[in-house]
Length: 180
Image 1 (cartoon, rainbow, N blue to C red):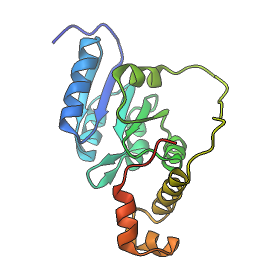
Image 2 (image 1 turned 30 degrees about the vertical axis):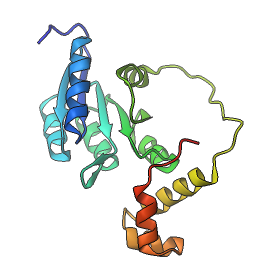
Image 3 (image 1 turned 135 degrees about the horizontal axis):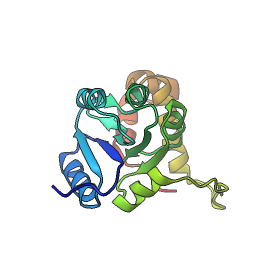
Image 4 (image 1 turned 180 degrees about the horizontal axis):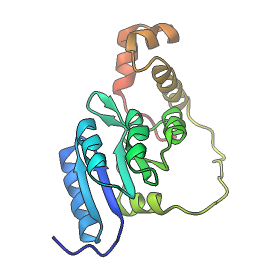
């Protein structure tokens, strides 16, 4: 293992084994000190053992939500910058992550360069809103995700709240969101 050239300690929390290995190896090659956790329990245990500067946190950890881990991880490493990584990006979850204390939010697949940029983002740039509106499919996806979050992930309650059959909602949830 190479001698660390950066003083930043990074905790990588993700349940995808291949992704964790590749990300950890890449960051280690760049000189960062990494620790890996593949479950919520492992993440909490790692946070109890060490103080981290940066935490890469997957939104979905098996049956657990990364959102539920944010405050716990920050209680052990209060100055840590947490970047949420997810393949299921939505505006409601991004807003909730930031409210919970996350520093940034990235959609998978993200490169190591993008992740490091998300951790180091110190700029107070003006946020620009795209001129083209979201597609109807994307708006529907965002709405479903918000209602699902309000119902604490309960698909049956969400389907009732949306006025649709549970199986229809399950099919929609299995689809990946559109980019625009």
